[in-house]
Length: 109
Length: 114
Image (cartoon, rainbow over all chains, first blue to last red; front, side, top):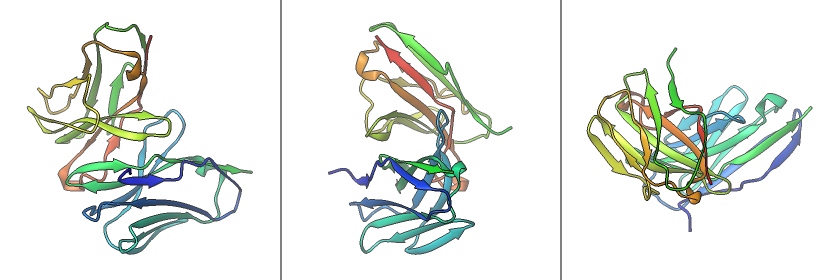
């Protein structure tokens, strides 16, 4: 079993939809939870991070962590075609990042 | 501009021909790392370095070597490349001050080994 599991998609939604991206993990020692966004032919870039259970909001993006269920989510409200990318969850283990497989998202105009 | 650079961006080579992929960062970061990205497997760490002359294995180090002689550079060496090392490679750097969470990635190097 992988330490971090993420549905690879692909996920296709119409513009304006609410998108939910999810990851589960098995290691309760993970302290930081991150979401990276990767556009085609580019390196990943940090989108959001949090270190506690609960919600963290940044504009149209909300990161949610449930440590008791070992489950994290990223919600995108009013999705835009410019949100089309691969989204990777990542978790910190003593300075080392463990990534999920990434979910490919396509937002259609 | 703060950035991580990698060279070359694209490389096609043959089995057994030694190659080096360079990585350089201009942010004075202590921590640097190499990943490979493969479909369905996500990003997997190859090697990382906490500082100059300090390197350690990641999850998939077999067939790779690294060195960290200067803070800004972290080259990845494939002494005898094989076809299973065909992949997309990313270098990343971060500073403990911002938390190891926020790693800054280079643009990637697409390697094909025939």
